[in-house]
Length: 393
Ligand code: ATP
Ligand code: MG
Ligand code: MG
Image (cartoon, rainbow, N blue to C red):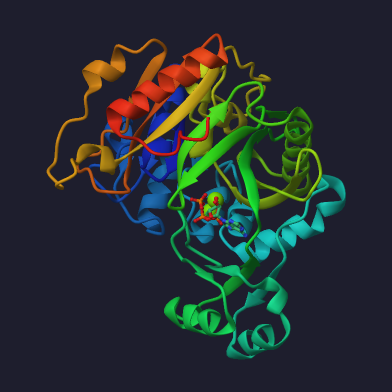
């Protein structure tokens, strides 16, 4: 049997492994952590650092093709792997997505075909650039200063209202390469998952609406009417254009802002992309006939890409470690008995040993034939578990 490899052993790797194994593949995970969620369920677990030559050699020895689930895998490591094995997504793609400056330059480069632009922004890499922005770009305030690299879940970001706050924030972020983005009046956020094969074949999921709480994804709404259809169509076309323009291979997630621009449906602004399956696509496991992880397996292994069909309305509730603690900070077991008695509730836990506040421990997909029922069940589940982010439905 053939073996598929994945760089990174987190929950995305674990769900990739599950999908690969269902198709009869062996799997190999490279992750230094002995307890990593994907390593625990994989046939092979290469326990080295991401740039350890011996580990990389072992992975290519074992695998027919290799993917990544870890956004910050060294692009150089993917390049090394690609010398002997098909690697999807490739080092160049991952490299662009790892750097907000390159990412925004790419979005700008394909704006003509995607029909969307990003929020107004300026690059701040040097004290001189900071000064120029302080002097000339008052239009970007209030704004968000974001580190170009290594930020996720709202980490590495500071909201700034004044020039003084901007200067202080840049120092606070270690004077690292940053972008200052204008704060936009968001009426919603959405994302689109696209899969593209080696042969250029492209399939995509319908856009989903995302609700973030404290910078972390809390809820995903995936059903007809979750977004205005005009907007959903534009987002989907834009995401496909971005993937095609890149010559991307594998699953790509593109995040969008919906801004209040006075038009009926609002305007669409591209935020960022993730070169992998994405938290906002976890509903596809239970609500579609092929999940985002199935498509990642197909794309990297050179299998035909099925156009996925969503058969159920769905709401995904992210389960952060917070759920494992009561108001006094005492650790507790969430009430799974009650949650699992709810119709259409599908619990996914990632097998992480230690719950911590803010740590992604699992998710709960609620599926059903009609949207009203799914919303009701999601509300009940959120009440039982004390989950935020559902007030707006
Ligand atoms: P992820 O975990 O999705 O990779 P991240 O840390 O890379 O997130 P962003 O997606 O850039 O961060 O921002 C996190 C959230 O902050 C957004 O989903 C949005 O809610 C808010 N946000 C970011 N940029 C802006 C902006 N320019 N205007 C308004 N809100 C914003
Ligand atoms: Mg990000
Ligand atoms: Mg984001």
